[in-house]
Structures are given as structure tokens and as C-alpha cells.
Amino acid sequence: MNLKACYRPLTLKEALDYLEEYKDKSKIIAGGTDLIIKLRKGNINPQVLIDISFINELKGVLEVGEYMEIGCGTTFYDLASCILLNERLKGLKDAARSIGSPQIRNRGTIGGNICNASPAADSVVPLLALDSILTLESKKGKRKIYLKDFFKDKGKTDIRDDEILTTIKFKTPTKNQGLGFYKLGLRKSLAISRISFSVFLEIDDINRIEIIRVASGSVGKFPMREYKIENYLTGRILDEDTLNTALEILEKDIYERLNGRNTARFKSIAAKGVFKKALLKALCLAKGGGKIED
Image 1 (cartoon, rainbow, N blue to C red):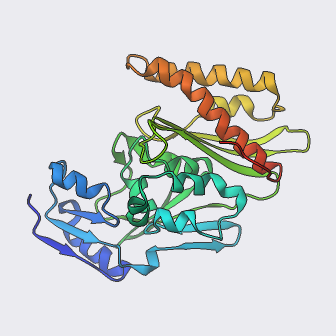
Image 2 (image 1 turned 90 degrees about the vertical axis):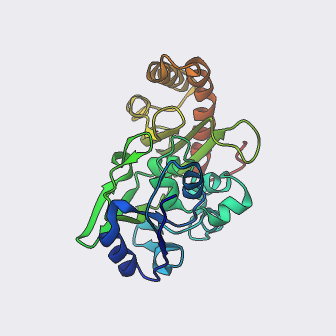
Image 3 (image 1 turned 60 degrees about the vertical axis):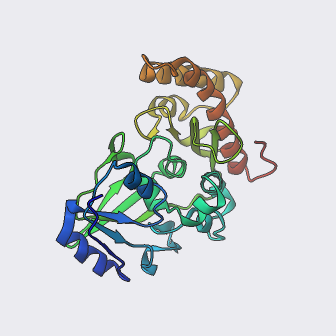
């Protein structure tokens, strides 16, 4: 290990000063639930760690007009227990609750989950379905980028050496809208997702889909939007025939994407059930609630 120093700034300005000085020789650490493992395995070898876990301005959830804004240092526990996130955002809270163990949820942060760029990053999937916008900051200023454009490849993102992801924001769902999430793991808890889906849905009074955004995890190189199924379902009345056709489209698309992998047949078939559960959860919330079956 080539680690020479660890800095613990108390403000974002201090953190950006360190990052400007050390750039690609440094790594940002918050919860450390992924980064510490990479350090121990020798997958990364920074000279400097910049610990942002004591910067209060990077934590918490704020309601800003019609938007919700989440600080990058917000833990999964804080996200899951946040009273500002209303029932229509149940999918985001469900994703936060599904991550790892209680210890991981108390330490792991939303910003770290995004920047780690794992295909199985559970919290990223509902944030994609919410069409979230990221704010990246450096000493040179701020820039905004849609989360859907942030991932470039497995483990690779559009963040520069001198930038910190500071906030994630999205429009708060309102009447006739809802967000559902469902994941398939190898066991009930402490499971890395084999497949996960989140669906943001807006319907009218006859179940016609006005807006739909579908996001998936663990069926590609990184979490991604499923545009083919979105394009098919938009403007259609959600009935059994429409749903069955959508599931066929999804199965074919995922099989073609994963073709050549041993898991292609399993994942393309299993994805249909996971997507359907996320969709029905979103539909229930868009209609105003009621019992949601897992």
C-alpha cells in the first residue's frame, strides 16, 4: 500500500482544496464500505485519502420547491428513515433498506453507491427511474449531469479527478405518480442483487400510462434505463395484453444484451418477474396506496 496521508476536512471548501492539490493521487472516502475492500485487495493504490464523512453540509435530505435534494454523504439508514420522502417514494426507501446489513446501511452513503458504479448498486436504480440530476463540484465551479449519462462502463463514470459529487436531486412525485422497486437476490438479506428493477409511473383515470421510466440493475455493465420498454408502454392503457407484450420486449432485449454470458437465459426470464413486481408497486402507489405485496 502506497498510502501516505489521510485528511479529514470539515467543509466542502477544504475537501476541494485537497482534491485540487492531489487529484488522481487521492481518493474520496465517505462510508468506506466499498473503498476499504478495494484498498485491502490492492485494486486501488492512492497516496492520499480525503475523508468527507465529517462534512455536515454534504448530509441530509432537503425539500427545495418541487424537488428533493439529497446530500452525497447521506447514509442508507438516514435515507430509509427520512420523513420528507413521502409514500410515493417508497421505492427509494425500499432500495435503501435492502442494502447490506444494518452496519453497512449505517456507514454506506448514497454518493458512494453512485460513484462506485457497480452494476448491482441498489440505490442507483430508483434514482435513475426518478430521472435524477447530479451536481459535481470542483475548485473551478459546479456542473450538473443527469444520472442516466453518468455511467460510462463497468466501474467507470463521468467524474473528473478534481470533482466531488455533492448532491442528487429529482422532482417529488405527486398525484397519480408512484415509484416501485424490487430486487432478486440469492437470499432474503445481505444479498447483492442478481437483478433489480425500479419503475416510476404516472397514470390517468383509466390506467393510461402518461409517463413511465424503467431502470434496471445487474443486467448490464452498469445500472441503466430500459428505453425500449418505456417507449412501448408510454401512452398505452395498462392491461394484461399490454403487460404481456411489454414483458416479451424486455426478455428479448435483455437476452440480446447479455448474449454470450452463462446467465443470459436465466436473467432475461427472471427479469420479467422482477420488473412486473416493481411495476405493480408503482401502480399501486400511483393509484393512491393500499397493500403492496412483495
